[in-house]
Amino acid sequence: MADVIVTLHVDTSKISEKNVDSCSNFGQGLGISNENFSISAKVGDTIIWKGVSSNAPKKDLVNITKVHHHSGNNVFKDKDLKGHGHPEKVSAAVKKDTNGDHETYTLFFTVYNGEVKRGGQYHIDPKLAINP
Image 1 (cartoon, rainbow, N blue to C red):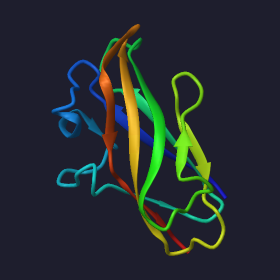
Image 2: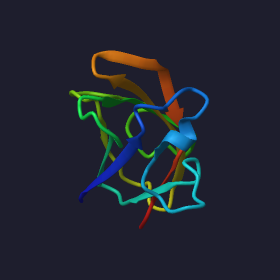
Image 3: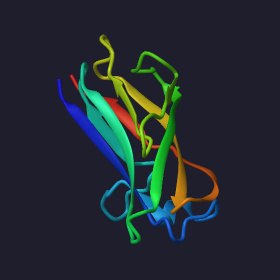
């Protein structure tokens, strides 16, 4: 059982509702969209989603406010996982009897430029695979 850290990098100076994919990523290689990005974990692992600003100033925040099960077998206890802490992040343990399951989920996040919220709530729909 291990922690699987998933970091969402966001250009907090440019992101808008129209350019979420071009201003945010998980550090994946070229040619892999955010929607095709897949996380691999094992039963008992704790997945931690956190957001970071990919540019200065360091006072900009990326809050992961919620992870919502979208399709496939839900591998977590709850369908909606709420953010906590400051900046907000989401963490959840992969439940038993989910080996080989695949899930698509929606990751919701907000961005603050200093004290000012930038836009509304953004979202991305990556995938999760539970390896035996």
